Structure formats: structure tokens, C-alpha cells
Image (cartoon, rainbow, N blue to C red):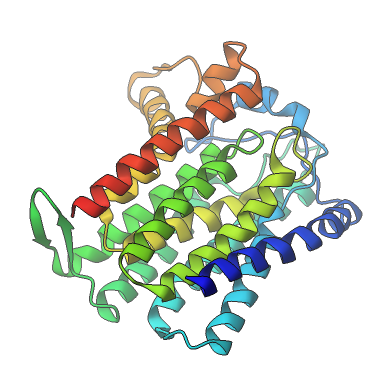
Length: 338
């Protein structure tokens, strides 16, 4: 455990040193949030959403890129330098999800910032259907590796027992990954909201991996935890830097993969309970628009509902963190009960 905590501190220290010059770099590259014209999954403009995020225009975007850079290089160095059993395919799914979804998010961020044609009123970022399709392709590749090379073919619940799935584990894993990729991305709307909740979830999974005596996974989680904690210092309200899609998609993808690797699938959705609530509120809203032609909720995702009611942004974030902490405790209970 000394090694695990040592690398968490080292990751925090390195990321902290690099963040200020990285923020300056983003300003020089003009990687700053623009006033947006987003489309939902049905290609309908989300005017109210855009209006509520207008004040964030000008903040550097792409903080997730630094997290990916530090965590990837430090992980490769740590596994190569110290006597930790390196399990190739586990490292592959961790880094493939982290870097793969990060690359997709980076492309989307760049498109948002540099491809806006004011004369033609081009919309913000990739069309949802293209982004969603690529998310599924990446997730199915990861799910196949879990099944073919890591031997994952069943799920286990303490109160039910072992449920054999065979090849069906691939689409199940892909569904979990895509769900969390979008859940973290949707939650990343207020300063410190998604990064703080992600940090809480990481602490829970670090506890689980330590309880399972899995130093390989614990080391990766610790490195990621340290980098995220350093980023959160600059991401709390008022944020000096934003994760961007490069960060939100990468963190969502790797969080799901970490959860699957622990073998505690039942605990994954509970530990990430606030993320689940956020994406569920958006799905309810989209379902209402698609099948009933009207909104079911006043506005979605749910953090925007509280913002619309007049709650201050830090108040919403702090209460979400508290709820996330309670979900993490419940998830740990479920994990260790099994």
C-alpha cells in the first residue's frame, strides 16, 4: 500500500505543477469554451441548455488531456519500474478506454472550438449519432477483450449468485461503458460536479481493489486519483479550467472499466449513482420529446433543474458530492457483502 499511496501523491504533485502552464498553453492555443449551439440526439437545438452555460464561455477547455497524459505515462513507468505483476490485457482495457474515449472527446472539443461557422450557424461539436456510434464501437472492442482474453463471461450478485452470460457479456460490458461515458459527460455541466463525483467513486474503487488484494488495479486507480484531485483544485467554482469532452468521455469510460475489472458489477451503478441519476433524467426528457412530443421534466439533466430553480452552482455541486459519498458507502456495502 505504500507504493499505491506514494504514486497517488506523486501523480497529484506532477499534475499540480503542470496545470498552471497547461492552462496558459490552452489560452495561447485559444482552446476556450465558445457560446454554443448544441443539438440533442434528435438533432433538435437545446436553446435553454445553451443559455444556462453562456457564462462559461472563455474558460479554457481540455483539462482532461493533461490528466490522460500524466496518468498514462506515469502508469507505464510505474508498472515497468516496480515489482508489480503487469497483466497485459487488463492494462490494455484500462488505457484503451482512457485514451480511446479521450481521443474521441478531443476531436469533438476541437470541432466545437475551431469549426464554428457563424455565417452558416453551424452547431456545436459532433452530431450525437456519430459520437454515439463510435462510443459503441470502442465499447464492443473492450467488451470483446474482457470476454476473449480476460475470461469474463458471467456476473455475480451476492443475493442471486453467479449468472452465466457467455458471449452476451460483450454487449453487457459495452452497455455499461457507453452508459457511464455519457453519464459523466452529461454531468460535466457545473464547475467541479463530475470531477468531484469521479474522485469519490475512485476512492470507493480503491477501497474495493485493496480489499481484493489487487495491487495492479489499485496502483492505476491511485495514479488516476492523484491527477484528478489536482485537477479538481482548479475546476471548482469558479473554474479556471474545464474537463472538456476529452476528459469527460475518458473518465466515464475508464470508470466503467475499473468497475468491471473489480468483478463487482452490481456495485458499479450504485457507486456512480449520481451519474446514473443525471443520465436517467436526460433519457426521460428525450423519451418524452420522442414519443409524446413534449417535455416530461422542466429541464434536463437534473442539475440544470436545480439551477433553474435558483440554486447557486456551488450549492448544487456540494449537495451532489454529499449524495455521491452516500452512494459510495452503499456501493461498498454491496461490494463487500458479495
